[in-house]
View 1 (cartoon, rainbow, N blue to C red):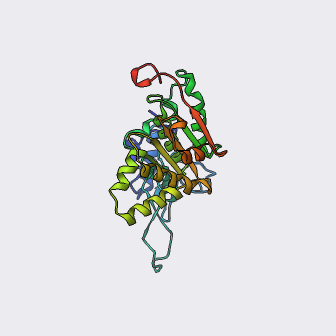
View 2: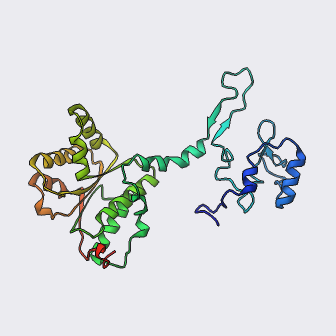
View 3: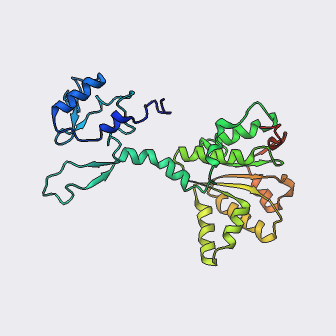
Length: 289
């Protein structure tokens, strides 16, 4: 069965390719068994089928995607590291070098892991949104998708009663931004307040500054529970810190716009913020999304 990149999973034959071929007979036997041959005009191996300083590893022209031979990374043959061809006298001789191609592929995973997205929420992607239900939410879906793709709006606010998929769209936007390797921080407002309350004053100040400066902030469920004037003041401080630099911000809330304090409402109604009012049936009751 093929994975999403069109490559077959590593089988016993592919795992065998990670061993060193010390004799030409081993290579010839493997190629005969798999029915593959190196390209005569290959500029990398020059038709030999072997690469490396001592010609000990299979060339990419041999290990093409297929049921027997497959690598996720043809640069390092799935070893995760490379060895530079240096003289023995060189101080870096024999040192393993992390494969740049593997590191590039792992960046989105690291970005997502650092985003603060709750465990299991990565499955809430845009592809799992039922676009046929709740017509009153389709504008929010399109706006969140555009936001996640780096298009306008710079600020997006999704408002509406519970159960319409606001958190789903917030998580989906986080995942898409991480796929694009864009620095993003997801945090629910109740969790943010609890988190800040557990920190010392210097640590709290540092965390607030980080939230102001992160490239994209997704603040979910603003207004949940009973909020004090200090709580609203904190949200206003975060928004003020992101307002003038126009750092991308997505906010969701069960509250109507009129329920926000005047200063917060002023920021959300600014020309840079797009507000989507979501309407429809609660999907948690089995009638919505």
